[in-house]
Amino acid sequence: MSRTRYARSETLRIAYELRGTMHWRRPWLVLIQGMGMDRRGWGPVLTRLRRHFRLVLVDNRGVGHSDLPAGSFTVADMAADVAAVLDAAGIRRAHVLGASLGGMVAQELALRHPDRVDDLVLACTTPGWPFAYPMPARSVRLLARTASLPAETARLRHTENALAAGPGRAELVRRLLERPGSRPPGSGVLSAQSIAGSRYAGRPVARIRARTLVLHGGADTVVDPRNGRLLAARIPGARLVTFPGLGHLLFWEDPDGFAAAVASFLLAPRPNRDIGCSEGGADDGLVLGQARRGDRWRLRHGP
Image 1 (cartoon, rainbow, N blue to C red):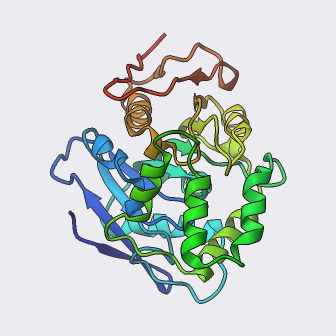
Image 2: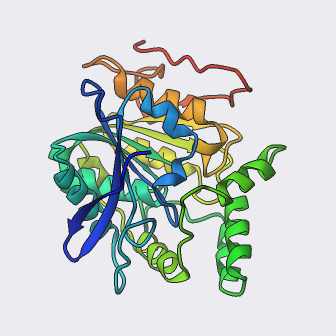
């Protein structure tokens, strides 16, 4: 495993990791995780993505090996952290993939630092209030109960909630809870990240100039799947791919399909890149069935 490096973002040290640096012809891809997840939260999708990209894995402030801020912070602060990582790594421009809260950070990075973002992938995320569809009631009820639950029970319940129901969910929950090297976030960090996400006011995403792919699980009970369609409709030229039957952590549930969708979009030839959607936009979004064990995704380029 690559060593942990650090970038300075104002008074904080932000931890990050570079993988695949020897493959200098491959493009850089920055990965930004969601609430409570450190850079190891990408799990099995990393090996798939590393076949095509050099990876920049970021620990958001307060999680993993990054410093814990003294007070509250905003999504804009987290985007500044990612820009500081790019500076420290000497990377002028990169593709950016953000999931959940990390998707909000990725949107903010694309708006505040458009010169640093090549193409953009937004997974299981939202355009922010007051424009987004609210959190599903199931997750609202869980959040309301979280403070009264023991820490380990809360982690278990939130992990279960982030995965779609199915025969393999119990094993995925176990793997997620036993991720090697991950440091469980404290309640203060989770609260601060939750507040940052809930206060993220919808930005003028129509000003995003990066080519954008939106990915969402059709059975997501953390972020309403209709938010994926909202984002794809508002970002010029964006494409939407929906994974029926998958939950919030779709990159754990179907790492092959997720990685194939990302790589197909980011590596497609310019200027008329596509991932098999018909001409038009978000209303023509591609819907993918869940792969069975051993299946391979074949996303074609062009019409």
